Image 1 (cartoon, rainbow, N blue to C red):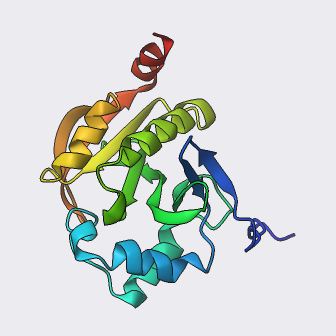
Image 2 (image 1 turned 90 degrees about the vertical axis):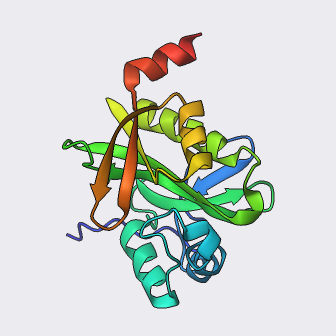
Length: 191
């Protein structure tokens, strides 16, 4: 018996979560060149993400195939689109993370330059926290950020995440680790 999940239909990729303005969905083959051109190949967008430099087409495709979900799992990076047209504006998702020495999940978002400053990071971040705590039953969630990336730090703090420590990530450089515990998040949403 085949243990691999069936791929999501090219016409209807798996929707992981939605917000009033956004849809986070599984990747499809047709998304690869769009993500490379819009995000992974843009030096301004990538200066604080991953290794701090844009990815060439082949490296971007390899990255997407390795770290994005194509419908077999609700975790991993996924394509972020804006309603109502479904236009790609970035990527986000919850990915396994052992930055603090345990099996945690990290929320993440990388947005196209044209949507910066519109509250998209906070909106998708809130949805990711709810998904991680309510659906995945996580005890805590992490956010890793380049210490020079002031807008992303602000977004994580706005989400209620607190700075824990700075670590050296082998492929990502120095990263500030921000944390929110399930109980803290639930108390903040009970008010």
